[in-house]
Length: 439
Image (cartoon, rainbow, N blue to C red; front, side):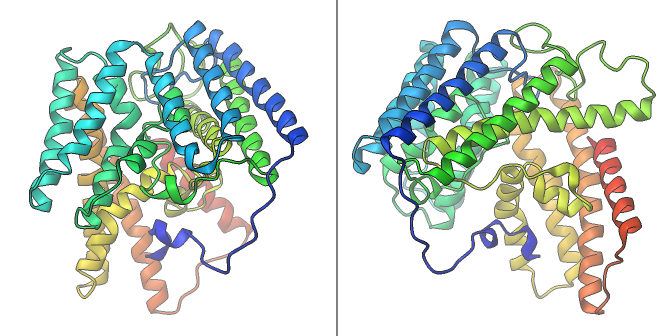
C-alpha cells in the first residue's frame, strides 16, 4: 500500500535551482510581518484564546514569560539571516535552550538530563533489541515517576520531546545503531518553535530531516508559505476563541480533560447528533491551530518538514482522512509497524497481512505509544483512557482494513471505484460521520 508509505511522499527528480534569499528590504518586511504575528499570538494568549490544547493539557506559558519566549524566537530568526551556515545549527540550539530555561530550572535541568540520558542509552554496548527495550523501560519509568509527582514536570517533557525520542530510536534501529553526531541529535530535539509550542502528535520529523531540510536563510517562497500557515493558525485561534469561548482557567482545562469536550455552556440545547459533529470539528480545529502555528514558525527557522495537516475535513474515505489528519503521527506508525509487517509477510495472503499490519499498527502500536507517552502520567485514569484508546483503535483498524482490502480486491479484479457527484457526497459525509462517532 504505497499510499501509506511516507518515504514515497518525497519526490525525486532533477535538482531545482535554489530561490534567491531575501534582500535587506525583504528581510525588513519579513521582520515586520513576523513581529505582527507574534504580537497577535501574545495578545490572544493573554486573553486565554490561543493554544488551549487539543489534548486536555496546557503546557504553554502565559504573561511575560510567554512574551519573552516569542521575543527570543524573533531574535533567533533574525540572527539566522546573518550568521555563517556552519554556525546556524548552534544558533537554533542556543535559542531553544533559552526558551527552555524560561520554563524554570526544574523543567530546564530535567529536560537536559533526560535528553542526554536518552542519547547515552542508545550508545550502550548492547544488542539492538535490548537497547530498544531499555528505551521503552526508560519512558515507562519516566511516566511512573511523573505520576507519583517525583518528577512533576515529566509530563510536560513528554508532550514536548517523547515522540521525537522515539523517532530517533527508530532511526538508530534502522541503521544498526551506527554512530550519530551529537550535534545532529541536539538540533533534532532542540528546535525553538517546538519548545515554545510543545507539539505532542502534530510535529514529528524524521531524524535526518533537520539536517537535510535546514536552510537558515529565508527566501520569498518559504516566507510566503510560513505567513500563510501562521495566518491559518491565528485564524483557527480566533474562530475557536471567539466562537467557542476562552479556556476555563489556566493550565489544565477541565473542559478538555475528558475526551476533548467543548467549553461548558457551548452547544447546550443542541441535539446529540449535532453535538457529535460540533465536538469533532472543534477537535480538528484545535489540532490545526497548533499544527499551522508550529509549522509556520519552523519554516521561518529554515526547517521545511512534511506538511503536518492537509484539510482533513475534505477526506472522502477513512484512508484519505488518515493521510490528511495528524500526518506525522501516521507516518511514524507506518514506519514503525505497518510497513515492516507488510514487507515481512508479503508472500502470505494479502488480505490477512493487511488486517494483521493494521491491528499491529493501531491496536498495539498506537495504544502502546499513547500509554507510554501520555496515559501513564495519570495512574487514576490509565485503565479508562487505555480502554477507550483500544476501542477507538479497534474501530479505526477495522474501517481501514476494510477500505484497504476493498482497494486490493479492485486492483486484482480490475474494478473501478464508483464515481459521480452523489457518490462523492455520500462518501464524504460517511467519512465525516465515522470520524466524529469514533473520536
